[in-house]
Amino acid sequence: MTLTTQFTAMMSLALLGTAVAAVIDVYHQSLRPQKSAHRYITDSLIFVINGVLVYYVIFQINGGSLRFYFVLAFLLGISTYFALIQSWFWRLLTTILNILSIVFRTIERIIYYVIVWPIKWLFVVMLGFVTFWLNVLWRLLVGILRLVQVIVSPFVPRIVKMYLHFFWKYCDNRLKTVWSLIRIHKKKRRRQSYVQEKEVDGER
Image (cartoon, rainbow, N blue to C red; front, side, top):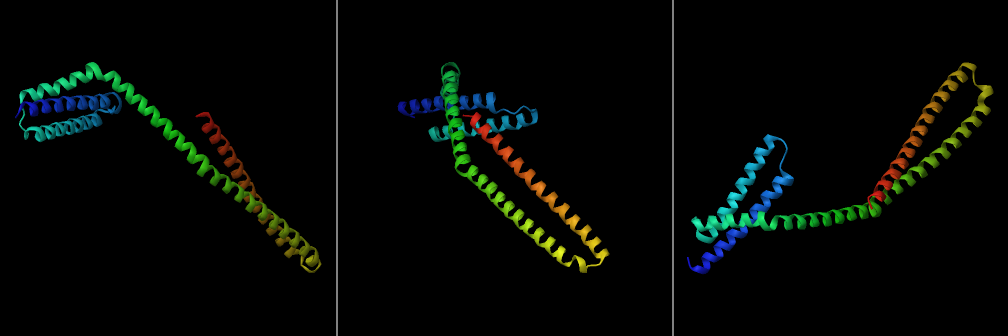
């Protein structure tokens, strides 16, 4: 190996040591599981991935031949990270994560107000429209049936009237129950929409 090649190899391994130290630091401080069984698995994966990466770089530089100054350069990169770069790296990482959080939150609000909110209120309006016309048709049907009852009542036997009366009361009670459930559902949806809007406004 020429002197230039050796210098390039040492710089590459020093940068690799810095990158490996940063990955391990982020893993230990933010991503490491709490359970010991999971921790053993993830620790092993991190160790294997870093080992394969280091061997790949050494193989590309020197055909996989490990030399003593390669180890020194790699350890120098790790020491440089923990001594000089760690605090700056975490500040940069925190800034990037905060920016990404703001971007994702903004996208979430845009999607909510542009897509979710109009669809939700369109559904509420359509449900109210259908409920209104069903109520109108029901009242019209009730009026027609009462008119028919007045007309045919003198010609219907008393026992038939009694059974029809019970049947009518049963249907009327069932329909009133359905209407009350629909009203409760509409009130619940309005309350949920109001709470969601307040939560979205509170996150601004």
